[in-house]
Length: 192
Image (cartoon, rainbow, N blue to C red; front, side, top):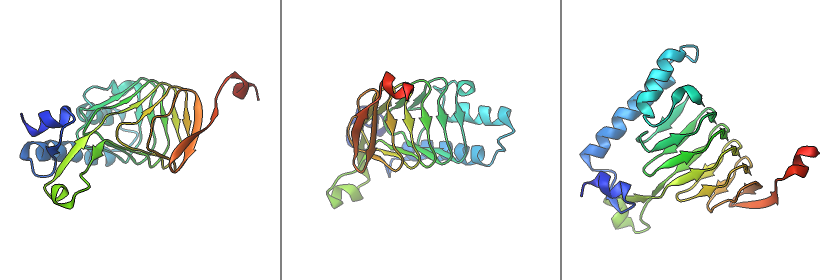
């Protein structure tokens, strides 16, 4: 089993010293740097680069502002109408899946990697990863951090500067550090 196979299986794998994974990260990060240096007005070139970075995404159906960074890119799935504001980082060692019409504020990070607490194991470069899933029509305010294994339900709003450590259900307003549900979002909210 390769280190990449272990990564996909959610097992402990050598993230820091495996030559194949290092090469994959280097290639995609170089593409991200090129994307970030490309003018926003040059839509054709930006889409060409984004398609290389995110092979499972219809890049014409999403909007991604620079700077933008991923670790691998091939573990990212973005639904149509999704918007990623400036300085979004997707640490996609495991799958990161966004539904349709997800709005991500500036400076947000989505982190799938988990490192050992033991310093000896950590020094060996070991990590494992858990997927992140964001439902349809979710809005994440600026500076939100989403940790490994978290699912955020459709229609929910995550307040700015929140640290999302646990699953958030559908149609709620949640915020804080750690992020917690504050209230249900329903039809009455729209009528106010």
